[in-house]
Each structure stands twice: as structure tokens, then as C-alpha cells.
Image (tube, rainbow, N blue to C red; front, side, top):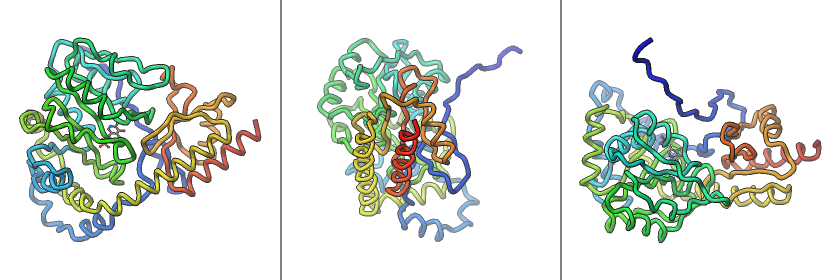
Length: 350
Ligand SMILES: *Cc1c(COP(=O)(O)O)cnc(C)c1O
């Protein structure tokens, strides 16, 4: 057949519907969203749904501007940060030079580049799985990476990001901060100095709203306007009215979300200690997940053992360098205790 598109899609973690499973495979937050979200949902007037949702999402932009000490013009809102990334790719990556991103990073970057036929070059991570920013000193049509990176969890200090922005002032540099609330320093403070910086954020991880599908870009108004025009050319009402209302309700409750984030980080540190005593190795994570391996255990068997006990983690058998690793999202303390017990059983039984 002529004219049919061939494409390798992004493959997300499984979403089984069994409510008793322990789901640690997509870096979701194990805790519920803020009570403000529940109240806003109950108060939402169904009648509002007869109207189209907001085109400019100004109410959510105002809430975010207050939170980040910026202006509403610094923000672009989308249906999940995946969509925001798509708008940014279309708006900013139109050079004939390749865009650069790490070979091991969020899988969607390559999918968007392929889908939009944007030339790209994957830069191999160092031996320690770290991004070496000197490797990005080559002609390029834009740069993109997650900070902290996924699925490694490793964070880059701002001083290095600043250097990268300085060296690449003629292209857009996108820093995806999906996990920044779990550790590391946000690049938001570099926006005033570097108009070439675009930051991507999501409500899916630290705000416990993965199912709501809201994400945003923060950047210089001049470039945000261009990404807005892509959104207007594609799906102007991409954020539905309920999603915008609930996202706004969540923004203010920093106290609740800080306590949730602290709990997750404390559990992450506890879980790391347990892993050490069981002989596991893992990368230093500033996120809500750990990339874990073990010198004497067959990772695939461990993965299957966990699945057989209704525990889902992420396994990347098709990525050569990750074949001996599992990415384990940090759940509640009780969930991680169950995982540690299963690891103990598994290591005993080997
Ligand atoms: C989860 C994740 C996203 C996607 O977030 P959504 O807002 O749910 O689309 C984007 N980037 C990275 C690095 C992520 O881990």
C-alpha cells in the first residue's frame, strides 16, 4: 500500500487494572493529590462543559506565574508535558543540523524526532551513566535533556547547565524538569539571563496528577509565543476545563506536596540502604525512582519474580546498556517494604 507511515511508537509501562498490585513502573506518585483538587472537582459545575475550554489557559498561567515568580507570558500549557514537548519540537527544532540528546534518556524524545522527521544525534552517556556536557560542544539544531535524567536519576548542577546555555546561544536548549521537585536545583533562575532556555514541567509526578494530563513549558515570552502558535495550529483547546480547574487547585497546596515529596525521598533513602545490604547496585538518584542492578542476580528472573508477586517495575530488555537494570519507582513505605521482602526471598532462593 502506498503512503502508509511506518513508525516505532513510544512504549509506556504497563497499566494493569488490578487494584491490589504494587505499581512501580511509571514513576507515578503513590500518594493522592491535594485535598484542594478533590474539593475543586466536587465544586465543578457540569454546565461549564457545554463551552469550549480556555484557549490561553490564562487562569492556570497566572497561578503558575505566582508560584514561580514569573509572568503568565512565560508559560505554555498542554495536555501532559508529552504534548508540550511535541509543540516545542515543532516550534524550535527546524534546523538542518541535528538536535542532540542523550542516548539513554526519556524515550519520547526520539519518538517525537522520528515522527516529525527532525534530524537528531544521540550522545552516548559516560561509563557512569552521567551526561558529559562537553560532548554537546558540536554544531547542532538544539539540545534536549531531562534534569534529573531518566531512567538514571542523575542530576546536573546548574553551573554546568549555565555553561551549556552560554555555549549554545543560537539554539533552543530544552531542560525537562519532570523530577526536579525530588531533588536538584531548577534552571528557572537562569531564564532571565538565557532567552534560549525552555524548561518543561509536569503535574504527573510530584503533583500526583498523572491521569489529569497537564504539563507546561516555561520560557522567554518571545519563544513561548511561537510554541503557542503551534498549539493553535494543532489543537487550541488541548487542555480540558476540568483539567485546568484541578491543576489550578493543586498549585497552591505547596505545603501538602512538600510533605509528600519529603516522604517519598525518605522512603527512597531507606530503600537504597536496604538495597545496599542485599548487594544491589544503583545510581545516585535525585528522583522518585532508582535504577537498580545486582552483580549476581539475573535481572530478567528478578523482574518475572516480582510480576508473579503482583509487583510491576520497569525493565528495558531492548536497550543494550539497561539489560541488567530495573527501574523501580518509589512507592509508599509499606510498598517498598514488600519489595525488600521479595528481594530477600528471591536472593535466599537463588
Ligand atoms: C513522565 C515524564 C514526562 C511526561 O509527563 P506527562 O506530563 O505525563 O506527559 C516527560 N518527561 C519525563 C522525563 C518524564 O519522566
